View 1 (cartoon, one colour):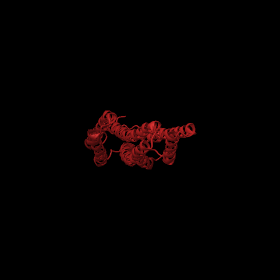
View 2 (view 1 turned 135 degrees about the vertical axis):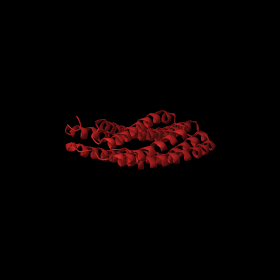
View 3 (view 1 turned 90 degrees about the vertical axis):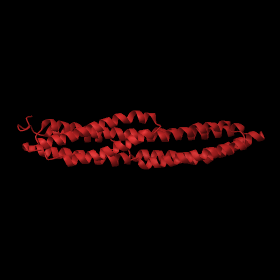
Length: 280
């Protein structure tokens, strides 16, 4: 299973995790056998630059979005990441003055952990907002499908079809873009299959509605059967759209794998032998 559930999150978080891992390895190598910790100013600056840019983009998004949940959830992630960056910078500065500094080591570890978890929180919060956009469109289609029950004339049917078409097109486009983003193959297949079923059922629905309208207006027999067919198609489409909504909310990225990355720092530190030079 992929570590991250979308390609965007993977493309941003993986390099950050690698940079942090590099920091810790340099730190570990510096402490082995009581050696001085190497100057971490440059790698810390690289991490800070990457994270600061992400925070800047995030803050710009918060300023322009109408998503109140995003406005609420983003700021704590900003604070977490910025505080972690500050600790990393302080650690690098302290190590320049004293390559054996124990407080600097603690700052480095705390800052590294904070950046990994804070960046993860930030990206997941933004991704959840993107999912909510798609779900709003899906729910709009669900609501409009219920209007099929009151369509009883050909004029109404023409209007209904014209109104439903653009929404269906928008939903299909958003679902296609989302499935391409997902790293979990099973979730991609589920979205594609459900969306394909909805698209296949659309002409079936219009046909069933037309038969119902024609049968009702001509007062021919078969009205109950026509009604049943129309309702069945609406229910089937609604069920598939609800399945799409359910799958959209799945974020079964490999949390254990990501947790192992976050705990990597602590594990590395626990393996460093006590050194009288460090005073530990």
